[in-house]
Length: 516
Image (cartoon, rainbow, N blue to C red; front, side, top):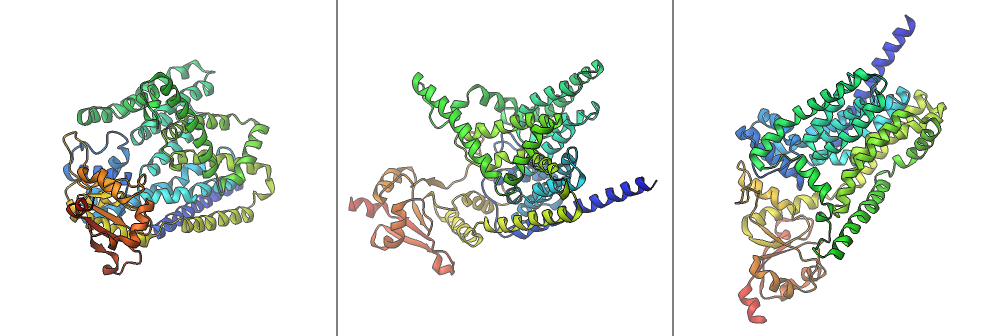
């Protein structure tokens, strides 16, 4: 009876500890959330998709061809909030991402608890919840938070000893496939693990077809809707397309036989090189101290469940390698591995039994949390610059047709959306989202004259200058733009008392042609 009461008391304590960790995690992320500055890049498409559903109650066309699970999840939240101002909904998307990412602490804790004591499992949960990369990513409001949340539960249920509970891993896998189609690849290892775990009972074999059937039944509705609206299912259309022709997306792709082989070789070399490079990068600063001892203990103990996790991890890294082969160099493709990193990290702590005491665990948790705050603060972008370049982008959207690809030009899309609000971005004749401002890369040019000559007929009308230009000749132009009679200053940050120097110049091609 005393043991039972103690166990119940410990259970309540760990629930309290998890609640405290989640609360601190959410609070830190909200502190660093730039509430007055909208997001950019992929988050805009997810936002537009979710808003269109909440507004029209119809599946949008042309915004996303796949990976729409995240905006589908957001759309009811947007419906509850209503068609308020754009920034309210943008911050709702970010806060939702933050909360889901912080809640992932729970499945990470229970995943770690399958291998180590509850005290060490708390350290594993803390390693995930306070990873500065995970925290930073959740603030962006993109798919990773929900994707990692679902895949962590997928990992957790895939290690169960109960074949009936194992079905939940297929459910989580199907849902994560709606969020990110590459989850379809994980169907291979989860099937292998099923037969390795339950091969002794023939009755369990009969459950596997039912699990597959349930997996397919979950995906059929969304695949059908996507086919009706975008002429692709967003699942097999992407997975098999990439597998059959990975070189198509590499940096070199020609018809000649020799060059094609070179292209495939480059794809493979880039995949492995960048995967190793970024695996090393994301393990810094915390995982790099824990993972080596974890692998040492794994070799020493030969834990079968941890080997199953490693099998899953091999398949989870394949989408990242595919992206790196295409020269898409972002660390976020590896974040799905972080729950496995956490397990390996705390598994190594079993070597040091003495630190499995509350005072040592508490000290480690404090160190992890404080270091995450420091790193998150250190890696923050200049929000003053972001705000000011956003204002420049708004000016460009209202007054410009074509401009050089300037730092912060990724805000043009959200500025266009804000100008059209509450209407969405226009859809062109190809059923693709379009916006009116043309952007022209200047990085490969060495002179202003060549840049203007090459792009004047394509729609270049203005030049944006800042303290962080993408070209040497633009850096020089910041200093001596007044000496060019065919450049007229139409925006000057000094007039708005900005901290950063930003100038917009209008090109007078009539004057320019006279000087040729």
